[in-house]
Length: 427
Image 1 (tube, rainbow, N blue to C red):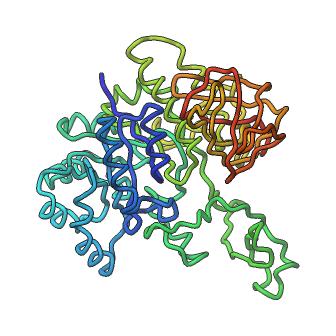
Image 2: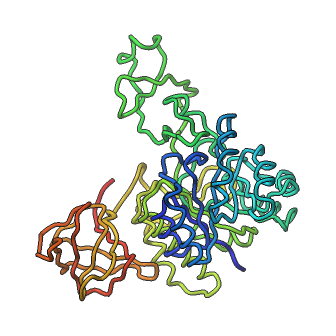
Image 3: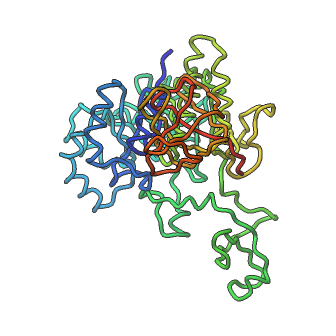
């Protein structure tokens, strides 16, 4: 039973990482029409390299065009259709149905249409309607339980079904949220979400707010915005929980396949290249293990604890009740609220310039005496505490920093593209 592993590509570097670490396909956005407007996205300068990368790998590439289009955005799209046609896209991911006739006219049947999760398709009647409209794939709302997914697949077997299996979840229905617009003026539906549901809030005391609010009212105060109060309504001593847990379905791949899912999607176009690498390879190993029966994927699964994340859960796949935790207590280190991180992404190993001496693309400082780890698509980790650092003239130095020409000398079996990380304990 084959299934596609679909990874996020917020920029060219992440696209390369996604393909190198096991994705069958990647989804990206163009700067003007993506719900991740701050993910850097892709520009015309990246086009030639994207074409070369796609030709070399033979993997699929989907264009995320899932904002809600106003008249100005629609006019901009019409003007840019010729330029968009130069990109080697296999599908457009859209939520605004008004784009269907425009894209069909411009691209005929050369490029597929995939319905964005923003459209909130969660039942078989809707799925059939979208298929009749010309969509070859529906990205189901995260609210869809496995039993409903099976019913949708049985009702419309020719329709491909895609679902998110890992990453952040929105507190709003299928991500259609107005909270960011209300509090910051930045629209989540236009690609500029401020992630206000993730902010740290406390219940402010009445005495602090006497000059702001009427007596007896309650309000939230956000950690980075002292003195700014957001009135809330409280019933029976409870108020809304804003920040959701993160989704992780790696332990339940077979359940997803049995439900009829054709594509397993990883969230995270705004996440780091390190995140894309670790999550993609873990799910690659887990998917492959379904066919082989090997348990070697478990060590890669455990490495999901080493990326920045909130408490993991299975979302709504197993029902509409309380969101269930997914990881076993024996290895789960994510039971506390907030972000957890145990490794710092330091950069990439580049080419071997001399015997056992490599150039680097550093993102964070490394020092002699630290213990580094190198990871690859099929290498869980290689520890190294005996490396040497060299400056641009190959003289030994004690530390290497981002933005400089420096080299790493090691006797470890590393390659171009390996990621460098070091352990840290940050919460």
